[in-house]
Length: 338
Image (tube, rainbow, N blue to C red; front, side, top):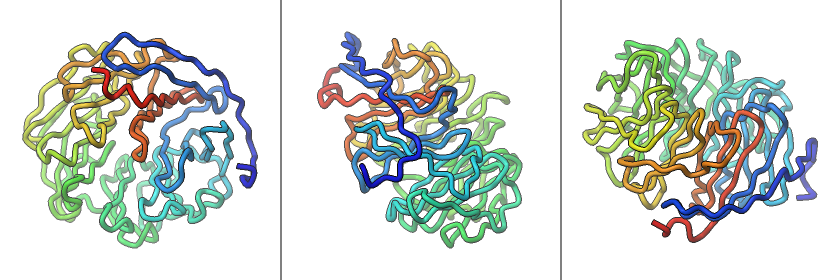
């Protein structure tokens, strides 16, 4: 940790142990802080290194060692741009892409120490979603506001618009199907779901999952079931489809807040799902979204913008908020307490 060129060091804001009597079984969490009023939009975990996180926020990027609460502000070339989304190359964690607000896509090839623009061919620069083909990580997909979907087949060096068949061009979320990477789903701000079966060469309208104005913030699916798809919406709660996105039903029983920012499905248990909400923190479901229970009920502030599980250690769970804080829970027993 001393080898990090520390620019900003963050003190531990609090270590709070909590006993839950609910079905979650989470016994403790710790709360760490970045900076006051830092709008943390997305957090990602490096898959090849323990305890290293990357946080995208309204003035750029932080990289931190979680266990020591040490954070580094890495913005060389990024110029404190507002970061909407973060994508770490799964095969090479040195390579990182970020989608920014009105400034396109930037890439780093040294874990965020330096950045350069990577937007050649990208004509719509408000990028709100970034995904890659896990089979060929050099193939990237970008969801934009106003321009639909763009694709790069050369690791972001150039981009082409791939929106043939889309009727709406504000794309808030993209899902690369975990069971077959040529199947791509895109959700619009107007509440529509589109599907491409050929790697975004063409799109077809599948269905409307929500009323206009209740846009999608996330699309998630389990690799074990190609027909079950979940959409998080801003204002209409969680939607579930059991037929590949053609028909939908509400999955909001027990959820007090229908403004859902994010969803996370446990990698080995598709019935275990987490939802981060605008006003009521995190909810957890142990039955595939049929019923929800409060997870961090006493967590304040209550906005949970991003919820992720560490894929190497699924008992570790991260939450970020709008105020520069993130929370960690790591209890090896909580998964079994149901």
